Image 1: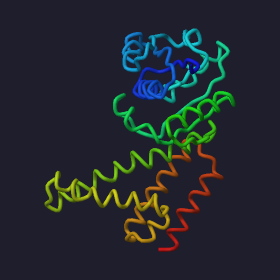
Image 2: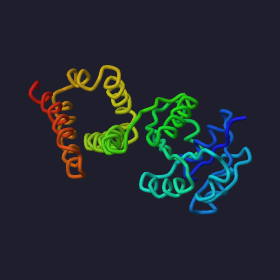
Image 3: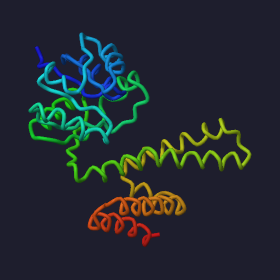
Length: 248
């Protein structure tokens, strides 16, 4: 019988991970939230006898607690658990999840950033293997870079698609048709970037596209600098972007 697990967090990720781990043979003893109603609803979704709880109660239900709360709440929850003598770690899936049901479908096989005390991080790594995922060991000091990369690969892609559709509409193309027309182009560009690497993919792209990529990268870099990115790291990123600029 697997050692029971408690889930700290009753949101989309907590519910998704709880259900997925339960489906893979783990025992989910409890799900906690600041809201008793949310904890109760999450426990129903996870099923398998999971109980609703508050954070401070989790060590009473299980020897292992999985923190699945928003980044701004990790410190608070970790301190509550650490006060009870628990070695704390974090497990962050590199995926967007719109609902617990969608999370059950899309989380298996994705990358997870893990960090924390050695024992907790090792256990998080085992959970990643159980979920057929890729473990990324990202220390706390590097989390800003990790999140910046995730933002560029998700939010920024969406932000570029919206004006592309607008331009097609200005050209007289219906919006629905514009989305259908641009989708294969966008998918192929993204696939090539990951298959060949961004530099190789950009080398084959029109100069205007490569220039836009670099301009977006430099703008994002300035934001990261203002938010505290170390100049050594910022300078290295800028040099890579400027190299491509000099090759045009």
